[in-house]
Image (cartoon, rainbow, N blue to C red):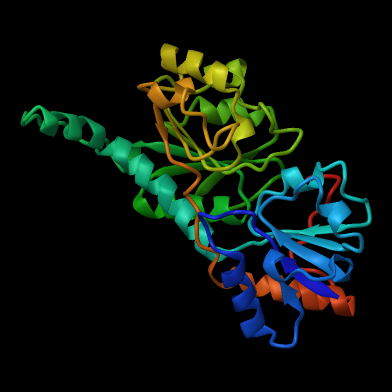
Length: 311
């Protein structure tokens, strides 16, 4: 049995760095990278950012795909992945903290009129403008899992009124929680900022279409750090032109990297960050080696995904 680390990325943590961390925790494990693959038939677990179409063919004895992160939609929907192969994800604390900070940063940027003041500075104009009051501002958080709960708590700590929405009922201290499809437009109509950390599932793909965007409070801000396929981007441009919402902050887009000629880049109502809201994995890398150990011993896996549900 061997564990293969294969991120396929050059601008994030390297395969060698991850393999080194796993070996530090488990010196006796057979941990490989593409450069040291050897006999691919010995690989029973692969740790990836995204599963390529040829992974299942290259790794004939694959038993487990470990996602190095949270979103697993491209893995569970891969038609080449045999039904017996299990899927796990990470629930790292470090990116949950970072994503919550990203939401807070861009909500506060709006509240404090930072873009306005930066533009005034470029014109050498001293133009005071009163900031918006946090206790009078309603922020909605869509998706109340590990990351959403952390984000809601941080926004609440700043002093905002916080509402949350999820598929099933949730209870979070100090947060007004709604659930179910019928409740989403109700929440959107009350929120000055809507922060989405929803996963990609059949129920969420294209959820923010023209009809759902119209339900948002005029002039509100939509922030998406979940999955890019949540938003119909054509409908978003039209909605922004009409002021519902008034602004969108997107860390994820339907195509990544976003093509240089895409109209979202130049739209005055859009702020884009290149999928950087959550970056570091922190202590969660220990779960990679632990899941390989559990796979070897038959113990329950950490954070196993229900492939039918998609999360």
